[in-house]
Amino acid sequence: METATAQDILWPEVELIRNEFPILQQTVNGRPLVYLDNGATTQKPVSVIRSMQEYYTQYNSNVHRGVHSLSQQATAAYEAARHAVAAYIGAHHHEVVFTKGTTDAINLVANGFRKTILKEGDEIIISAMEHHSNIVPWQLICEEKGAKLRVIPVSDKGELDMDAYRSMLNGRVKLVSVTWVSNTLGTVNPVKEIIALAHEQGIPVMLDAAQAAAHIPIKVHELDVDFLALSGHKLYGPTGIGILYGKESWLEQLPPYQGGGDMIKHVTFEKTTYADVPLKFEAGTPAICEAIGLGAAVAWVNKVGIHKILAYEHQLTEYAVAALRLIDGLRFIGDARHRSGAISFLVGDTHPSDVGVLLDQQGIAVRTGHHCTQPLCDRFGIPGTVRASLAVYNTTGDIDKLVDGIRKAVTLLG
Amino acid sequence: MTIKEQQDRIIEDFEVFGDWMEKYEYIIQLGKDLPLIDPKYKTDDNLIRGCQSKVWLHAELKDGKLEFTADSDAVITKGLVSLVIQVLSGHPPKEIAEAEIYFIEAIGLTSHLSPTRSNGLLSMLKQMKLYALAFQAKSMQN
Image 1 (spheres, rainbow over the protein chains, first blue to last red):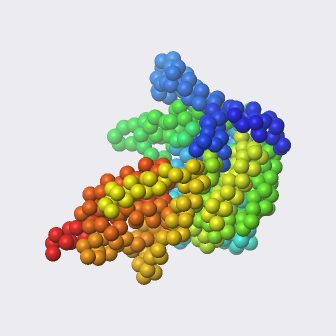
Image 2: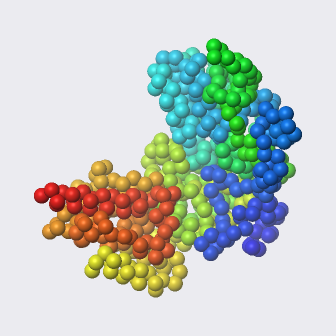
Image 3: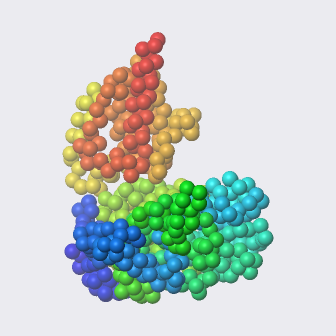
């Protein structure tokens, strides 16, 4: 066990948080693990792990169909998880569709727009800082329909060019789909303004909240956003589960994504009528255990408090940026005024993968490469970055070790 | 030296390193010392794409022996490439195609072979064996 983090200068209680994460108590390559790859996936608190174990050991059963007790218990827990996530983002529970994750949620909306809305000559707006999962689904449907994908440019600091965005909004645009927080740059986009500007012209907006969900309070009704996607595993929950939030009117309007059991009202060979939203979009046996795990994750975040998390991570990010800035030759990729989670950088002319390998030898987990944002890396003319991404269990001690680790790596690579 | 003897020599060389820093210092030095590939071979055709770093590999048959030259944009990858070239380059295609490569695991660098590391080393080993097979097939035709 480390003692350095016991009296963290920013937040002494962070040690209590760390104790709830069994995976953080190990050594990697002989060093205490410093986990700074939370943008890729967060670790899971013991309450999440226990909730999933309880499901399989005590009431594993299919949902929405059995009259027997276990099935009722499983259904209650599954729907309670939906209520918990809905409350977490300020939505009604029937506006929350369980999906496999953010990618799945974006594809669900893209498929609906392909079938019922998008026509030749229409436009969809995304931004230059999108993850591939918020590029490719739109690219596919635009190609198919002869529609145009338009891209909001990003400045050298890694911020969206809002003037360009304003000028792109017109009657041909059928949807704006942008990320709330950049997974590569850590930029927090002005989503309220983005939504308001689009709505002035009657254009709906989808937000990719994968990198926001664990860091920033989400209130979908206040934002007036039309669609929002997030992933459970980036929110201290399990993999394989996420949600799509959609305004009820939109979810009613979009056709089913996949056909199967659980999504129907009545089936004959001539005609099938569909279940009401959100079940219309949940064909087949869902990821029941994972949904329950996500419910437990949301409960855990609520216990810590998302506002507390926001405040602490803000301080920790400032600490990290200040400490990293002192490293000779280090330059940040993305230096936005409003940032969260990810900090990307390069040191001198070292290759990101070399730095990543040498940090791993010191027990420090960071992500290197293009972070599934190749167009963004091309925009900055770089092969990729080293990315440290923070979660609530990270400490100033973690940052100090990262800084030492980078110095050691750079000396070796010298 | 045979391919096996080359591997055993490298394993012996690595035994002297006390910690990971010495080991990587050596690999980085190998990377820096790797003879330059002729720029005309640094083409997209010769590029082995890994997720993390790029590797260019060129193969040429000289007096019945297959010779490899390579480069990478990452110096640790380049060092690993240098080790693989020391082992495999300059042997008849048949021997390369049939060689069992065990030194990477023996010197504790298995993680570099994992597909998740995707640094191109695994792809490069595969590509070298493919070249060997291709040249072997060609020589049998002649």
